[in-house]
Image (cartoon, rainbow, N blue to C red; front, side, top):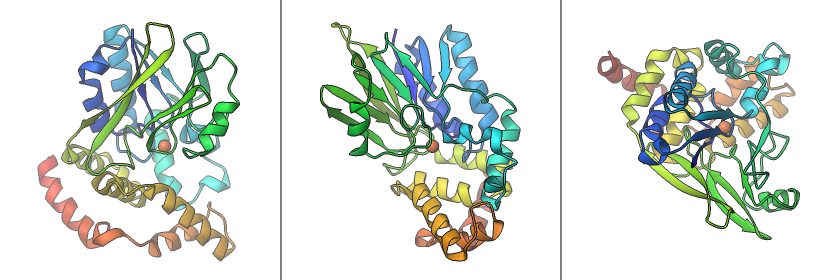
Length: 296
Ligand SMILES: [Fe+2]
């Protein structure tokens, strides 16, 4: 039976719900989630429960991999993760309890012909682009034909030296398309036994995501990341999240501080060029008052 491939769900219940209602997903006998199941989004516990219910009800197997966010779970008390912006990570971790501890970094399917990982094999936090993934394909075992990965939040399909690398795009934070659209993949065996992955997208309602943000407490724990997440989903601003994190790194260097210091994140937030007033305080105040009524 086909396998549903999800990447970078990031606790987006509206996106996950839309995906799981598609006939393509419902035809699947198993689910593989390529890491970053939680953080950034408002519904970490609800998404885990939804995934588990979907699999239990349909007799499907569920495999979740370790993303760079799950990789941080055992280190939440360390100085590098004490800064203001990591408050959201700690809030998210409290919601899920031990539900995402000890996940594997990689899993191989179809007798080793498919390698599933988050960043690159063995390293959930290793970020490669469409060029860099060609070199990764060269390192795979001889019988491996297909690499499935996430982490970048953008979709690609790269063919190189008789192999293929596919990133389905982030289910919860797709940074490659305007509007609230959730991407996913379906993995199947071709008639000749070789693996094949088809890519899909399904729209979901921005209002549902906004209500989840406003009702979850996530937005008030640390508004910066939710603001960026919503900007990404409204505008399709490519790599907005990565740009923001890199900006914070540069601010830390200029200040001679490190990413664990709240002052670094406050300075990064103050100097970030929020697009078109979309993320201004006035914009958020209006949005919140409008949606409070809608969500109640
Ligand atoms: Fe991610």
